Image (cartoon, rainbow, N blue to C red; front, side):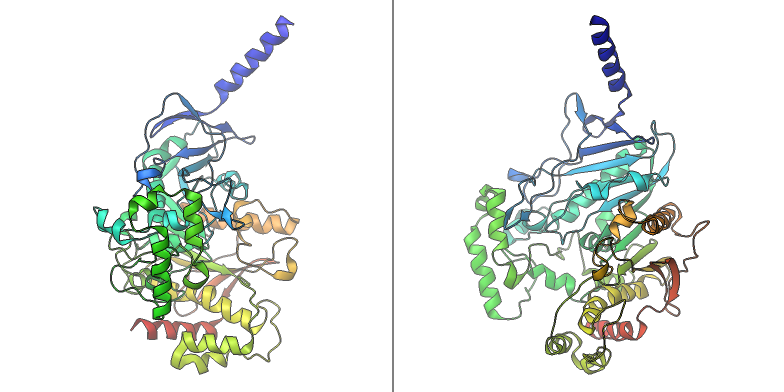
Length: 516
């Protein structure tokens, strides 16, 4: 019996010795070895908990801890609503990131990819097995995923917050968290085998919007060197960076300068909602996270969610679309695209006409001719209303942004067409590509092959700024003439040109009209 116990103790001691450990900002952490080699470190704090007096402040440097900190499990998601109330697993104390490295001990200087999750900036988390970084890391990169503050905790601007700020700015706390995570990467990633001089940020949906916004922020300059944006742009509406500042949800005083509401009734409702929350920062900081989320969600239907990016003069000095249009964004290689059927609306022809009138103004008649209600549904793009929604929210904003960025910067466009396994009738919906990017898709051999190709394109781009590599169909650069793009289809990657060109030409013409 003693012999057996002694053997067990020796095995436990050997296992503990084998567990990967290293020192990072704040102290020592211990992760876990991966079965195929390499290591994972999860739930690493990169800033102090943003609670109490640190609620609605820029992230503060992490405090040192004693002993060896366990880094084998994800940290909690950032506070968010779920099912009408605060998601039980979510917390305000949520500023954690995760790292996967394909070799341990780390000996190389590999490219780094930093994932910014989607969720509208009011939901989602990096603490999600769907974003497990092991498969991508196997392609020779160090993979990082990060949480950031969401909804009213991450994107709440208020005159009193602006007044107390040394930068005379408020809002954008979620973006500041992303920047803090990138600063942590710069300071620590070499210990994991990553190259701090070769960092690619990539994100999906709101995470993709944030990627593009970070390209316009002086605070993020030099922290990354390439960017990938999946289904998110800064050009969905040329006034987006201004209008979204009114979508604070709770207190609604977002913008430095006149706040744009469509009518006095909306302004009055915003002010009333703000009064219900309390008139002072003391009251607001004293509220529980659950109560604050509930109060912020109340006016969402009429005013918008508490997730708007604010042009605050500090994190975001100018509207991001304006920055791209004037070629003042970071001049880094960009890979950007969308899915074929991001949204499946159910609008009447009259609703579509009214929406087009509002968006296109004098160009509405021209735009309407492209989406006749009598045309049969397209096998790839769906009915006319679905085509219009995806063209104006995703597809054509990608083209508009590329027409700005590709002038002098390596740029690549894609469209993802394959439906998620088990959801074939819906087509390639919003987010369908993510499991292919991370290699977590559960499907056929064709799904696995497409996932492998996408992973190679993404990681090649992270390594060199060019997605091309041996054994892959050539992906041409985007330019204003051919507008080349890669289409990820049921039959694999297919190089094409001029994605929805007549439709996007009208959209681009309208963008120019609204910006001048």
